[in-house]
Image (cartoon, rainbow, N blue to C red; front, side, top):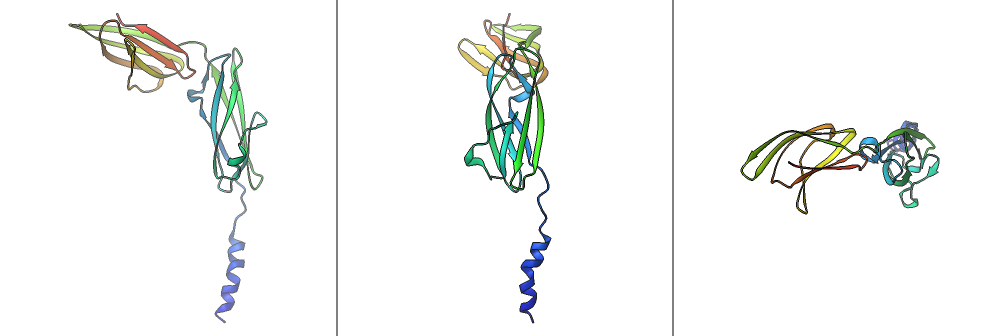
Length: 191
């Protein structure tokens, strides 16, 4: 009599199993900040996730998932993005899991041909040292700011954003270098 309930256990567990009805999650990792310089070709990267395994990823209708990634729960993919000369680029991402559920996401990227602006608000001199206060601005987003002293580039630990305030100490002849999310670059010598 004890064996009878054990025989029904696999059937009970099978009855409790839920069918997969959730679509995969899909998104872009790069380009960061949603900015792309017009007329450039860049390598974009993304991911897709589904507990039952991802079997297909399409970007604007074209398959981009490598064969060795098919069936994995978390997959990474790459594709080359050709940006037109002006406007916006819309990228349509689609992922499909093993149960034929489809997830879709549209990502709009801004075309940014304008380099960041480096504004110097105040300069204080102490002997052979400059203390410079200012702001780096960009319409899409400032990605990084560095101090160039001779041939050395020293990255500044600043937040990312569209308006990034800074204070830097440097010797005369140094310059600030700012790069935006689209890869546009601006350089300004310190007074």
